[in-house]
Image 1 (cartoon, rainbow, N blue to C red):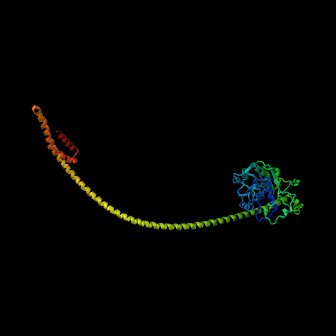
Image 2: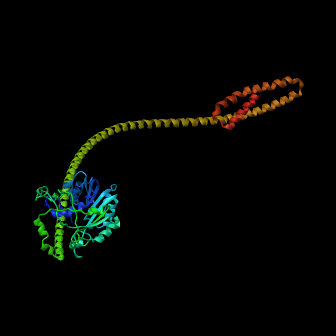
Length: 482
């Protein structure tokens, strides 16, 4: 079973409808009111059917962009969501969601890492979840080792399928086999009369649930098993009794007679295998062409999208370029205006600085003249100070000579005073003279020396050396004592 196209160009095929819907009927007993995950949903008809059978919500996942696009266009409805994602990492798509029912039909044979896929669906399964997986019996469709389905990574036997799935999910609660069934059923005119012979494949969703159906034991020569079934079934968490499901199509007795004619029964198993191999090869070629056609349509859609995006980007770029050009021109105009203002300001500043420079030059000339005048006055003062110092030095020399002469006279008078004192002390009758005479003599000497020593000394004081000034002071003190 490969992907079933439901586009408007595909006419309704009842056999293909039964092949695909029989797989989804495996989930019908469990999905009512449940959260369902449909992995590798194809174009979404199965997700739509499960929701119609009572599922509260269906999350459908496929890695084909074209299939998901068709699913959204054909089967979008409240409670159904379609996602473009790989089966091996479906747990990343639903990190916080746990599902009650997980369906994966005819997918495991397409996967390079089926163990990753099994661990992924196990991680998103609720504790009491029902997991349903089917796998085609490629060893019946492709009997020899050199024959295989071009879209399948591996040809599984029933034992290989069971070993792979049980290693991750544990032993299934029910193992089963799928294949064609033959029987009789009851229909009404409502089903037959309402069928449009030109309807598309979506007509298969106008199905009727059977009020009652039974599965009878097969005849011995037609027993179905792992070697001659169409597909293998594994159910985890479900009831083995509920595995008996089917999707049937009513046919006329004429068609039934052709199907079960003696000639058809007499066909050897080898011839049947050859015909089935040819049919499978043709189906593979058909599917390959359909896949290439889908890829081409996808590429065309992508190219149209890219072209539209490029035109949109080009329009945006043109608008941005025009706006940038306008902004550039406005900026240039503003720069030119600022340039004119700056030039005018520069000219004004130049005139201002010229005036200031002229005034500064005048001030410099005036200050220079004042400095020259001050320098001349300084030189004159220095000359006068030098002359005054010279005059003071000459006066000091003259005063020193006069002071030396006065000291000599003072010494002479002092000696005379001592002589007279001695003479007076020797004569008792001359006491009065002894007391009065020195004071009168001293006052006379001091009066005589004052204009000669004291006044000139005061006048020359600023110019006298410290030793000479000290000598003058000693003489003055001596005169006062007398």
